[in-house]
Length: 387
Image (cartoon, rainbow, N blue to C red; front, side, top):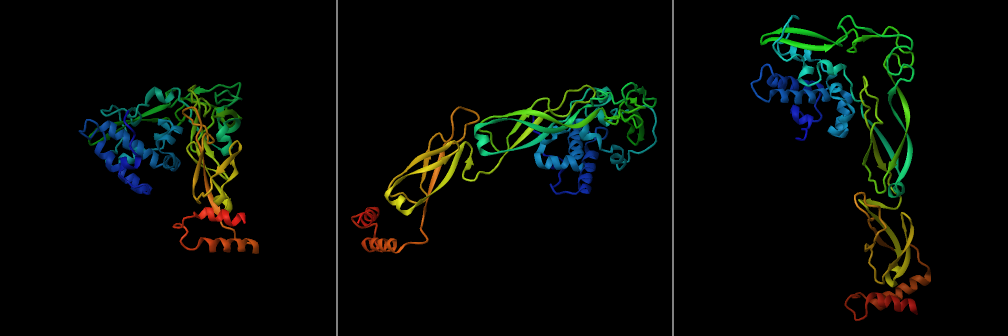
């Protein structure tokens, strides 16, 4: 399957384009690729692509979601949701497609037929929207994994009317305007022939039924917003920005359709000591001038406690040591990353008279050309300290 093109690229506009610019770009492209006027054999597919781009970028909510998550964020909107807010009559009036309503028609039945969800599909089962939930965890929790109950706001079937939208004990009736189809057909005469459109019925709002006594709990919507308790399992080694899919825990579907999914977006909080790089951890260990010179054994923190690290004599500041297997678990294979400890030699700011005296003696012994002398720099430090 070909990768979807960026919506801004499809319309040929910049990301910061105004609504006016977006609409202007769409009208120009729609006029060029409208199936009733274009001779391009791929006009239908191109028209669908530019109309989908316009439907998203002309709607503030969908545009904000797209700007943040790209095409992945559009999973929360069904295809029909994307196109519902477009006033195609207003768009095509600018092309001279106005006129009186009449019978017959030679073009495609409706803009919804072109996109594959006209006719009975509008009244058929529809999958519920996906829900995105952001979960913040610590680095320790990311390392060990966790199982946790979270409270997710989503849409569920109304418990009072069980989704019927009518007050218990009452029934709905068939809409007289559309005869229960949920749609009405309009035909416009255009210079290119008759242009037929099918739109949701304004009387029943596309439902095909009239409810005289709406449910008091959901106010005739059949669904209610609530917080659901959902148990999620976070695997060890999960990374910041990972998305975990929990099937069937999104919004309830319409007309008996399946529910959407829940996507848990993981955010790992910054750690006080460690910096993470994939499965590896990095830590900066301060050591003294004497420890760097003579060598020492120091304790280093890890995610699971402390370990002992040997500092060799003559260690320079900025030297990095690898402690194998003390990083985070790998997500895709067994084993753990490493802990890298970078030492930083700290220069004392205050010295006692005795310390100053010893350092001055050391300086006298070393002289200026310490690297060219027969006796090494750190050997001289040992000599001074051992006196």
